[in-house]
Length: 246
Image (cartoon, rainbow, N blue to C red; front, side):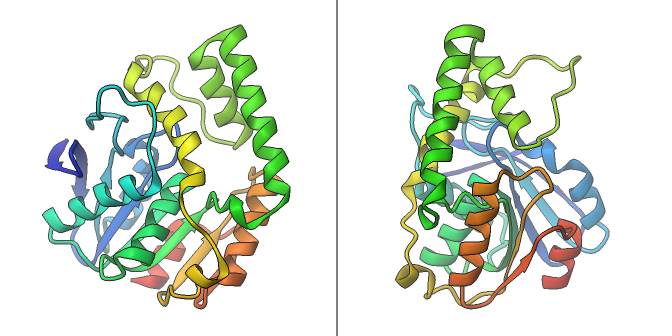
């Protein structure tokens, strides 16, 4: 891993391949390694930068680290792109990572020229997400009380169809556990309205994974309707979507 200074924290990243820049922004409860196969597939035709968001993997986090915002995460990403001379990258992000990219498009449009958003957590756009998120929160709280932090996080990952971690791998660091719960609350910190989204004028492909819950799919559909230059791709391969934008 290599390191750059983010917005007040040290960020760990890996870079592979050559060509146009592609930034990979992982989702909740993961780190840059979640993009391993995808990064390998893209590195034959692109310069791929995958990093650990604050609190995950080898990246730092404030102490105490109990909360985050999408804007804070986007500033980290902007610092990384600037440090690596990769402004104007095509960016790919999942769940909260998708919101990070969307915030870059809104507030720093020169940082990203096109985006692929997988299962974007655009929940303010859909009424049905309110009850679904309340249920998720209740389930997390119950698992925390009854089975502990690891079990609560893993149950959420399973509900989204994420891969189970390698049983032989070391347990996540306490900071990574806190980062997951900071992320969960941070999903609600990005303003998403028709007016705001109408200002995004960049190609955006919006994908949903096969295991995406209904409220996630509904959020992706709503976001695709409101972004001026969006393509809704329900089951496309993210690598194919990225290559189409390069």
